[in-house]
Amino acid sequence: MPHAVKTQTRLHQLNKALESGTFIKVRQMLNGMSPAEIAHLMESIPPNARTILWRLVSTEVEGEVLQYLNDEILKQIVKKMNTQELTSVLEDLDTDDLADILQTLPKAVTRQVLNSLDSMNRKRLEEVFEYPDDTAGGLMNTDTITVRPNITLDVVQRYLRRHEEIPEMTDNLLVVNRKGQFIGTLPLTTLLIKKPSMTVRKVMLTDAEAIHADMHRSDVANLFEHHDLISAPVVDKNNVLLGRITIDDVVDVIREDADHSLMSMAGLDEEEDIFAPILTASRRRSVWLGVNTLTAFIAAGVMGFFSDTIEKVVALAILSPVVASMGGIAGSQTLTLVIRGMALGHVGFANARLLLSREVAVGFVNGMVWAVIIGSITSLWWGEISIGLIIAASTLINLIAAAISGAALPLILKRMNIDPALAAGVILTTVTDVVGFASFLGLASIVYN
Image 1 (cartoon, rainbow, N blue to C red):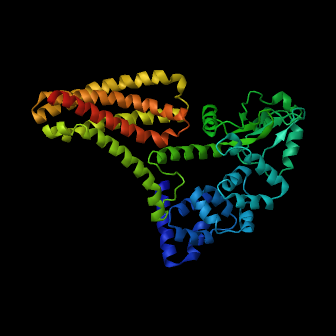
Image 2: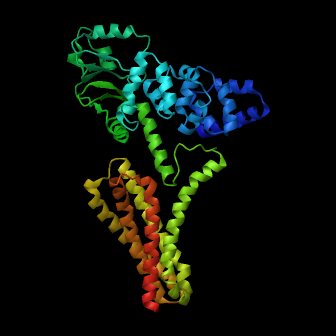
């Protein structure tokens, strides 16, 4: 059964059980699900049902469920827990997961939880907290296994057997010197197949690239993608080993960045609760609608300058949206392409001029093709070659302007430290509307006045 269908089936069964009050059946359902699946269900039901469901979740998996919830719902759940309950729930989580949760909570709550932890775990968390959550330092897990280069593989194996378990996603042991500086990796496969009498120094890999703690998390994701990494060491400016990042953390980064880009284009927060109260959701969306209203009045103001011309030729009022719409679509295509390229590291200021030239060329070619098509249709429709020529010329002008705007805006906004996914769409729409109306109606006013 496909995952989406399976999830909807479970959601339907859960809703029926909650409505009928058969909580024993709900608990049985939850016991057969992973923490991630439970979190997904909690995000898919209204707040009242969510509260009931949380009470039925096994205490053994509560901490893991919390790490999969979005920030808004996480805060709702944690708000109803006292410090002792919260500490008990979170105590078995990995350092990076625990840090992610605590960074979303009020500082007073975070301080109380930190004070309740033992000194070792508190120190590990404080090391992670030194770095912003969008950096490698904020992503890393301090739970690592390190070895020295001068010991034999036999000693390493005996050292590992003293552990009840090793950290998840461990594909390499990290080799450090006496100062704690990272010098290489020892793959577990090498540890198994090489002679036990050989030293770590002879078999370790020294070409492994360590990640600096200040590296942005999107660059970390690109590094994992390009080198097919499962885990990677994190070091400070002195090359001292701080921890490691694993592929599961990178997958979360990729998903969150994709959510951010998609939701930002609509002016929404990627952590927004889909079942948030109506007034709360309305207030958040009103801000974006207000911005759009302002830009719409700007475009309308441009049309107002040509009201006398529009009164003379009714066709202009009917055909104006065609030019603006064509520019909006063309600009959105370029904008999406550039923002995606920036996210993947393919587009930057180094190749901006080449990209701009290419997009102008694409805009010109598309402009010529669609100018002929739209101009011909318009001439046949209204029986006037002049109006066909006007709309053809304005279509060409607007598609070129859309290409320039779509390519340049994300780079300009990035230079200004403004999120392109959030702001570029609104500015682009304004530009294409204004240029479209101004070129179409401006040319018409020259011809008909």
